[in-house]
Length: 206
Image 1: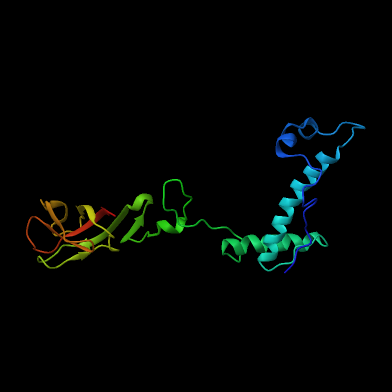
Image 2: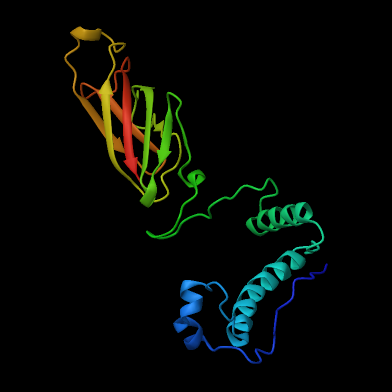
């Protein structure tokens, strides 16, 4: 594709250098009434503005659109499409990349989760919190599974008996838990695999 946005004075002839331009009082304060507008200042001003515009026009062209001053509405569309294409999203919305360090913008989808009765939530820094409602293990291989596998380890497991447990409020039970690995655990009430227990659990890991 093409662009008709070009640099003014591309060879920078008869033009202020950066230091002179930075210190120019007319650049800083604007031109007064009937003031002379020196050619060197004008060339620097037009050069700066046209360089930026030409660069933007070239980007639009590189992404498959004509960059032209013939129609402002078409140019707006070309700009939107170019930004969307650069972002990888054809809906003209912007998405953050997945963050990898503390000063990165992050993508909300990095911290996925499920808010079901048995669910989980990923948090910044790699922490994962999981929860659920499970029946008591009936033997030492009757495992209960975490909603998702912890990538590295489960660091803590808390189990709270529900009133649905046998004897309900009248049961005088403690709970015993074992984190077997990153996918599963065991638990029982009263120190035996008697069954009949129901509990809520929270597991924390990464």
